[in-house]
Each structure stands twice: as structure tokens, then as C-alpha cells.
Length: 443
Image 1: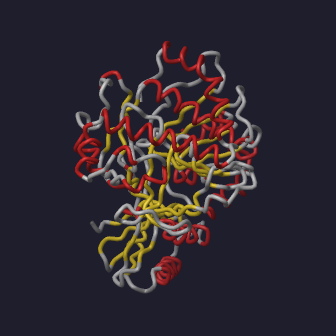
Image 2: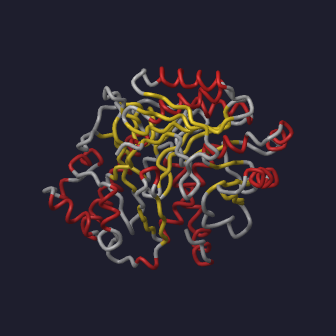
Image 3: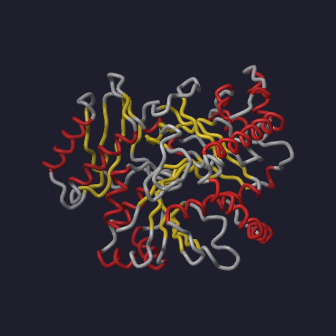
């Protein structure tokens, strides 16, 4: 993403106090107030998209949608789901709203584990609000995000700004693909209050840290924010014990212009309902009952340049009922479970479906059991009958441990597939440095 210029920074500073007050207030609104706010924003975005974006006008007309029948979020099911292929094929002519010129927008590229590249565009106004919604997440996770706090951001690209113009809210960047010893030195030197990074990179870096390094980090460190890759609560709990601070998850999406849901310090997984609508649906786009697992589809409520309405993220999740409240006091509903990417899941010969969340637990518990023998790992389903446990062996690896891992993983996969334990020098990563530890090569 391009950096904020001076005009963008000036506008951000002017707008920040009001946006921040609004975003803070919205977390604690009464449910009826929050629902009215969300309903109004949803209807406004749907009608804007229909009137100004060719993709939606054609899509809704073809489906026979009466746009005036959409009067609240509860009517969302009347709209067809937006698929990733439609965005890829339609960009930019069919997906950018009238009145916006592509060369004046900020664009981002995302592909995730699917390997399909999606381009997304945002207006300057959306980018400014995106910054403030990020600050709200940090505020929630840290129990107060203060102007002197430093965040170290281990990521594939730099954030659009390194601080506000007055030097407050500093962001210090480390490239995800930096050599580990270099990343360790930069991390220690940055003295962060908040550390934000991929789960796999956190695991890699922590293996380079001495007890003295960890003590030095604890001088300032308040929280660790993991994002962009799947992690389980068991992993986050173990990392929290190691670093002595909460490790909390953030579920973000470039298509949704930032973050869709994030954990508070009570580990409630809150959906940001004032800026997004999240639904869990079946294959046909019909709503699933609360608590049931299905496809996550989402609507962004503030990207007017390139609207995203009922977009199928490719993720599997379940929602808590609206009346399930978190002890933190926030009224926004919560994810009950987040199972990760559908295309990062396995289907066994019997038809049994194994989510990436389950498979992460399989691999991570092996890492905890055989820490001296395993440096890192991934599970790869090569075909319907064969799964490889690819791993970088540690100094403690033996033939006996290798066979035990093979037998244990076979049992966790219900003895339906042949498991191979393969030693590798490097694990598979995307060109942006993400590691997908659960990989299915079955189309």
C-alpha cells in the first residue's frame, strides 16, 4: 500500500478524535441501537452498490432481487453471495464504483492459501477510517492504546504510516522474510509494547530467544497480536505462558478493508458489527443456525469505492447467539469458532471433513511433545490417500521418534490415509512470507 501523504495525514489528524469517539462508543451500545446502526449502514451500502457498481447491478438483476426489499441486515439472505472469481474477473471495470478513478485509489493484492490473486481498492477516506479501526483493536487488546506505546509490526509490507505527525503511536516494521537472527535483533532493539505478526513467525522467532531476551521484551511488552494465519487457542495459550503476556488473535481481510473480528483480553472473539456484517451460511448462501459451522460471508460497511457485499471469504466459522455476552461488557456478538480456510482442510477417503483448526492441533501437539526433535512442521494432503508430515528436524530427532510421529498422526487421521514423515530443509511459504501449515493439494 502507498504511504499516507501530507494531505492524508492532515485529514487523519482532523478526523481522528471524532472517529475514535464513535468507534469506542459503538462497542458498548445497547443491542437495539447497534442493530439500527448496522441496518442503516447495510441498506445504504447495498443501494450504493446497486446504483454505482456494474457487477452488483447485473448480479442482482439476474437474481431477480428487488433492491427496495432490502431494509435491514435480516434481509441479506435475499442477495446472492459474491464469489472470489467474480472479483478477479471484474476488476476494475465491473467492481469500482462510479465516481472513483482507479489511479486515485489505494490498491492491495491478496491471495491467501487459494493461490488466486484478488485486487482490492480503497478510497482515501476508507484508508483513514481503516487506521482508526486498527487503533481500536490495539486499544481493546492492550487495555488502552496510549500515544507513547510502540508497536512492532512483523509483516510483508510496511504500514501506510510509521506514526502520527506528532511522533505518537509509533510503528516499527520488520520484514517477514528477514533472516531470523536479524529479526531477533530488530525485535529486541524496538522494545515494543505490542508485537503484531504471523503465528508461524512468532513460533520461529521465539525459538531464537534466550531467557534473557524474553526478560528484556517483558520490560515493555503488554500484548502479542497474531493475524493473517490460522492459530488455535491452545497455541496462543502456550505462547502466552512463554512470553508472560496475552496472545490474542485478529481475523482480518484485505477485501473487508481491515479487521473483521478480534479477541479481547477476556478471549471473546468480537465481530466489529459497526463496520462489517458477518454471516455463516451453507453452500447455497442460506443462513445457518447460531452455533452451527458453515462458510463465513462478510459485508464491509465503509469501503464505498469497491463495495464488498456478502463476500464468501473461503473461511469456516460459527457464530454465538446474539445474547451470548462477553464479560468485557462489549455488546458486539462473537465468533463461537473459527476453523480456518476451507481449502486448507482435508477430506478423508470416507468423506470425513477435517478442518484446518483440528489439523493444526494435530501438528502443534506433536511439536509440544517432541520439541527437541522438531523445529517446525506442516501437514500436506498429497492425494486422497496420502498425507505428508513435512518437518525440519531438530537435534533430538531419532528414527524412533519419526516412527512415533507417523503412527500418532495416522491415528489422528482416523487410520484412513498413509502418513509419511518427510524431513525438509525449508517449509512451503507464499511469496509474501505466509506459511500455510495445512495444505491440501486436492482440487
